[in-house]
Image 1: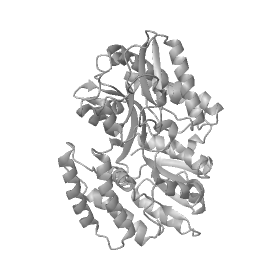
Image 2 (image 1 turned 120 degrees about the vertical axis):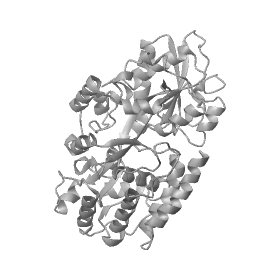
Image 3 (image 1 turned 90 degrees about the vertical axis):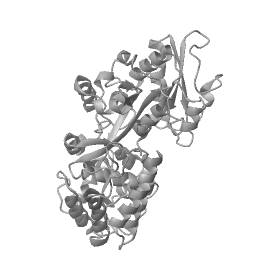
Image 4 (image 1 turned 180 degrees about the vertical axis):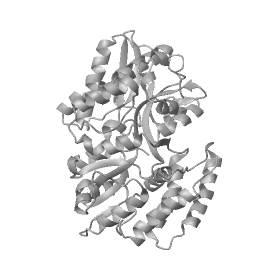
Length: 449
């Protein structure tokens, strides 16, 4: 699954845009009419995202001014990677020269042999060695580099500091274990007036996504290390369901309305009626700008449990038909647009602040070493949100194992949705049987994959 902040998950392009000029496919020839190296790229923000669109166009114009030998044709649409058309575009030769992918799809693109091997060229990417290795590894297969990560996120616990205070809890000491989450949720729900202590998703594959995140936090896995066998019918899997069952039915801290999805939960948090839910930091500006929340009341802590957290994100891969000149041009474009600390589309924090975009959220955090230090320094200097509300998340994440989503994630999440929704809607649901039944279905999916 992806998280939801547009400036980080920036999803655009499902089909060829009218901006494709005269080329017959989304890909382009090696040279434009002027003799420049031409590349097509996707994930330009749509016109409806006015500020992001303007930032993107400004950065693209500055890139072409600095690189007069390169012609970049950007395509926009929503979303960047449409699951309904993605494979068809790849198979039909309609994919851009430089194209967006979620982390979860990187290996699939490699397996079907639609990605260019960047290994001989990646040394020309100035920033490559500064990117977190665990993110670079997502686009590496059999020792070869097939893509470049652009952003990353990790799940945490968003909570309402005002409700914590009202319930007699210390907002500077968020729950660190699932037992503490349960206890705090019970106290928040006891405030009454429709207040909910903890909420979770259980529909549209989002319940399976959160089950996975909660399983990681307990130290468990959805599938075995080789990706061939399901591993949810375990003490960790039963702990996840047991905790949800007890909060829902014993404590009544999750409310009676279930089968929730992300928009429902965000609305509850933004209205001040929800104590806690799992999300990535990019949810925070959505809660403020779209759901009525206040930055001073919203904080994020690391995943309870202390074992692990689910990570996701996106990056760019290159069309297998790209020429060496196009690959080199595309890498230069990525460096300029997204991978220069403290600058570019995602890193120009001074520009973001001037345009009232949130600056100071703890993620994305792409770089390491001196590059990370520079990026964080520029971010801190331009922060316009209460960064102290996110310090627990930053500190706690250093101790967690970062784990990517499982293979065939959406199919697995669909099965796991049924497990989570059953526990939250049926008081007498049998977690052991639910996990056993789901395991059989998931093993079948993995066998076909």
